[in-house]
Length: 264
Image (cartoon, rainbow, N blue to C red):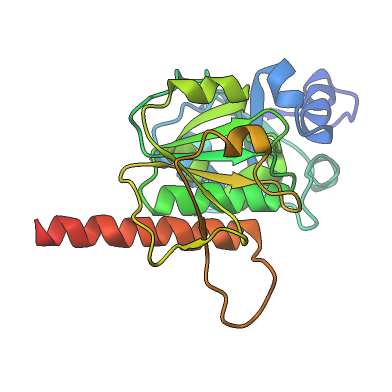
């Protein structure tokens, strides 16, 4: 980083105008080619995965923190903002005082053989981020978000993902026809499916499909699926939150892979 940070005190500074555009609409990153990462945990997660940091933005208090010094030192440029300006910029109720402006990663080519999760029309950013986090934790390598799903690199999804973005191949706003390139069976969940998750013969590897919070997997995508399974719910609830359902399915698949590995 430069020996002295660049200090900005004017609200109408061009950098701040651009950042406000980036943060005010969840899909603005697609046009601007940048993403915002805020807070010590997310910034450290980006660094831990070798992501280059063109710009860090921090408050005077963050500059005074020894714990945050390595995060600032990793940036090619650092800007210091007064607490009031950082607070006005941050989408968090309690601004973290440090953030990175990163280049939007180029969307990778679809890997036809990678263990995959397909998101079909999920609307809630928190659900999308949670599924990304479970995917990363359970060994999934690729997530395909079909068009109509909450924007993968939006600030809300980034926060809910807790750093999982930097450990996954992410394909954003993909047309459903792209699924034809996958050389893995697709597995969907439905509370009305006759096959139960615990009893079903799951293909491994596979591509798990998780659908809209209210409507489920769309008919066109469901028609591509090799099998549809239901999660047993002895408590009698009609359905699970999609992020919870994804965590259960991905854990069950990981458990079976581990069992096969130990047995083989």
